[in-house]
Image 1: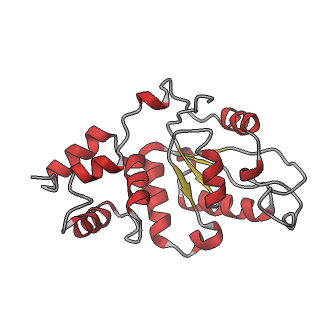
Image 2 (image 1 turned 30 degrees about the horizontal axis):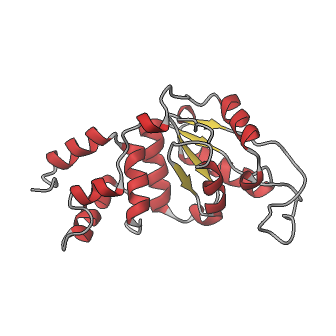
Length: 202
């Protein structure tokens, strides 16, 4: 199994199949816009803004017109110095899961091979870290249990309180919340945050 790239930036993609493809290549957080839904989703916009301020974002959308509309929208809500752009090659064809090609007949992020994705990331100027996946100490679901954020009678209420405090979307699932928290904190920083807010498990 090839080692994944570890990036400082969080990567922004359009949809879940793009995310599934990217997590095979990188071990950094990947956030979905939900396509055009991000245009009206003020909470998702706020989350992207917070993540960009904390660690920067790398935008990787499809090369069709919809992808560029989304990319330009994100340019309007995040300061330019907090954004980097990765551009995938324009390849005619369709993804395996689709019966028909897209309107513009090009393959999206989900259909790009590993080497081309890595090349696009390197050309973007994203900060590639010198650590492997096994060396990263990210927050995990077992950690959330240890923090009392899952598996306890008041866990849901505690998660809601943290989401509200951090300005994150209140509709995030536990797994999505973990991904978002990993964008904003190291494990030790999050534990310190819980302690400061008196939210650490007693």
